Length: 113
Length: 112
Image 1 (cartoon, rainbow over the protein chains, first blue to last red):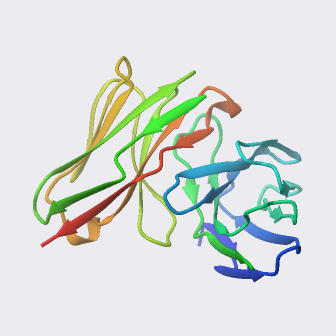
Image 2 (image 1 turned 90 degrees about the horizontal axis):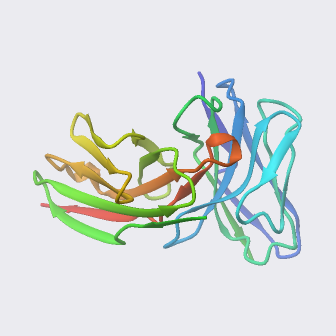
């Protein structure tokens, strides 16, 4: 069935380690997005990609990296340079410019200690 | 840039009506969205407004006034399952026309 998959649901890492969060979709959507959500704050855009092999920085890209080698996949790497990586990470997709809402995956809760 | 304001928390009674307000200041506007998010889950789409006026969808309605930079989400016949965070998001004109900026969300608690 169609949808957006993020795995794992919960992820634990030690400080200083890079970690990659996966986001896979079979909705055939062109655009994909990564957000982070912290308690008491709204969703903040990290990176987004409108087409394969192209992506742009969002509002809080420092300490993160992405790739978009396939339409279906948009992995996010949280590097050791990200000062406060513990957060709830949400991946979203949308069909493209002419469409309206974004569809969200179930999210990955990352805890770095 | 974009600035979006909405109340942090609201409480309402089951069966009642509640209105959640959202005000925004943007350098470009291309639509306003409302999402519902239960704790620990993904946001789900509720409504979209790009023109002034009221959009009704079952128990939920959303209103937009572009000249005032103002929107509200109206929830009728409240149910306990409506207890959730409600996110207001504005779509700007950059980023291919589908880049959203979210408010901090309004946590709604529905009581008996």
